[in-house]
Every structure is written in C-alpha cells, then in structure tokens.
Length: 436
Image (cartoon, rainbow, N blue to C red; front, side, top):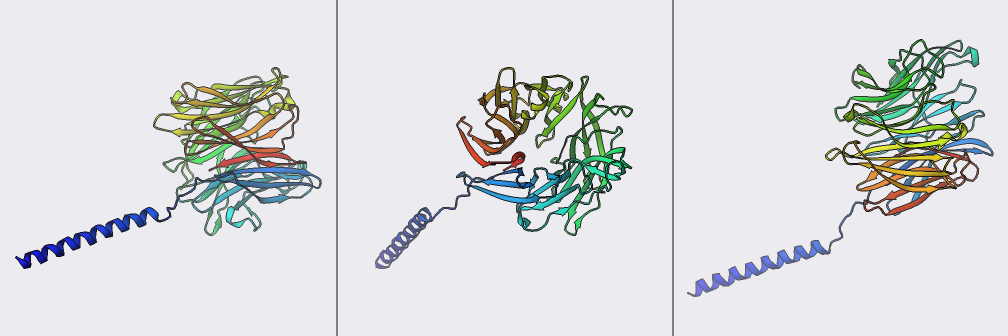
C-alpha cells in the first residue's frame, strides 16, 4: 500500500512538472516578439528633363508602407540633343530590372537601348546589342529603335524587345520587332523576332510572359503593305512566341483601328494577357481631337469598349492615359484607371473603372476632378486589396509640361491617401512604370 502511494505521488509530481512546462512554453511564445512582414513597397520609375543645364535624369522612387520616399537615379543623359525615356521595370525576388532608351532628336547616331539593375546603380548601364545604325540624315544606315520593354521568364532571365525600322542610306527598308536576352555570360546577340509585312511607325508595344511561359506582344502596325502615309489603316496585333526557340506561335490582328487618320497610344495589358487597354484617335486631322480610352478582351472576341473620352486641341492630347490589371481570375474582377481632359467642359479627371465579370460591364468612380490640374501617365498596381495608382500632375490646365509625380493609395473601403512623390522646379516629368 505504501509502495502504491509512493508511485501515485511520483505520477502526480510528473504531471505537475509537465503542466508547468507547457504553461511556461506558451507564455514564452506569447511574450516573444513576433516577426511581421511589412507590406511591399511601391516602385515608380520616371524621367525628369531639366533645362538649366540641359539633361535628362532617369529615376525611380521607392515608397514604403509608412509613405517614406527614397528616390534613386538610374542614369543621367547630358549629351546635347539627346534625352532618355523613363525606365520600364521588371522584378525578381532579389532586385528590380530597368530598361530605357537613349534617343536623339535629330542625331540618331548614338541611340541606344540601355539596361541596369537595382543592385548595380553605380555601374554604367549595359547596352543591349541591337544592330544600331550610324550616319546622319539621308546617310543613316541600320536599326532605329523605339521605346523598349522588358520581362522576365519563369527562370528570371531578362528579355528585352523593341520595335523599330531598318534604314539604308536614309530610306526605310522594313519594320521589325527585335529581341535579346541576358544570360549569366551577358547579352545574346539581338535577332529579328518578327518582320512586319508593312513598313509601320515605331509605335506602341507591350511585352510579357504568360503562365505557360509563352511570350506575348501587343503592338500596333499598318495593315496595308502598300500604304506609307499617316492615313494608312492600322490595327493592334497579338504576337505569341516560344522563348526557347523564338518561334512564332501566332500573330493575330485582334483590333482594327478605323478612321480617316487613325493612331494608337498607350497599349497596356493585364498579367493574364487576355485583357488590354489603349488610347486611340480615329482622325488626327480633327481640332479638337477626340481621344478614346478603350478596353478589349479575348473573353468578348476583342470587341472594344470606350470607357473614357478626352476632347482636346492637337497640342494638348498628352493628358490622356490608362492602365489596367486583372485582380482576380476567379470572379473576373478587373481594375482599369484612366486620365482624361475635356477642354469643352473645362475639367480633367482621374477615373477608376471596376468590372466583376471580365469586362462585360463596368462601375465608374471619379477619383480626382479639377478645372486647374491635369493628370497623365497613370499606372496601376495592387498591394493586397489596396490599389496603388501612380501618375504625373501639373497645376495648370493649359500646360504641356508636367512637374509632379503622385501616388494614390486607395483601400478596399474607398478611403484615399495621396502622396507627393517628387516635384521638379524646372523639369518635365514623365512616368514610366509602377510595380509592387
């Protein structure tokens, strides 16, 4: 009996020790500091053209969750007669990638597509090896690039594409889309991905990879090989290719742009690459001009819907832009932002359109409206349920020079926080890209 009592005491003692150990562990876990990952920062690329002394600064801003702002310079162009475009961006888990164009207004001899990464800002930019031309005016020979775009494949290999023209003795030979990729050993020699059947203007181009790792390009081009004038019929095409072989899977005319003098600006695409937005003019001879901000989707046979319209004189058509993203493929939610300016009503607006059915119908919201300010270069990204909208702004309804970069953060409840990212006292600012 004494032995049994002794064993019972030992068991009770062990149970008490175990209970104390569990309590101590839970208390320690509760008191230990918890590591909370902050929301990702917003990256906005832009260029700033200064007049005294003349130069172009290619920059990007990093805006964290607390609205702290850090601005970094990617590149400075000081050559007389040359400027640089704002950078297009891509990201991997380690850094951001930037690509931009050094371009001459008259002298094309030193036009170059340039590349840098976030981890090598202090180094000179790398030159993407397209077959650049040489000579001046009627003696120019070689490839003249338009604004490039960049995307990373599933292995985080950067690809850069650009559309441009081949010249011989100052005469246009053809229009081409060219591509190069950066391996660990450096850039591959650029090759012609696709030669356009018609000599076309070095127009708009949007590039990315889908979930099947196929490359997608949306671009605008003339549709008639025999027509070389500004009144030529044109269209938006979708080109799909294999990044492994660079073989063309398809090249499809998806949206004809009709009108006596048609033109296309700002082609943007959602990450799913079955939704695009663009700005079109059907008659550039009009004054004032009507600029239509359109949405189109493969879900509705690429039939265009006009969501916003600007009415402006020819010299003020710049205040029209757009961006879009597919927020959810499950319920087909699409967010679409646009800026418009109407000189007849005297108002400029920043607009948000939301669709819950893959673009079949839209709910519009006016985010900003002003008789004084204008908005341009809108770019869209999401941090969870929060929309981040970057744009340029000028507090002068008739100015063609924009001097401010702003970021709007809009919660899913509709509350808005506006952040002035950068202001320039003497420069013209153009926004290039926004990524989260």
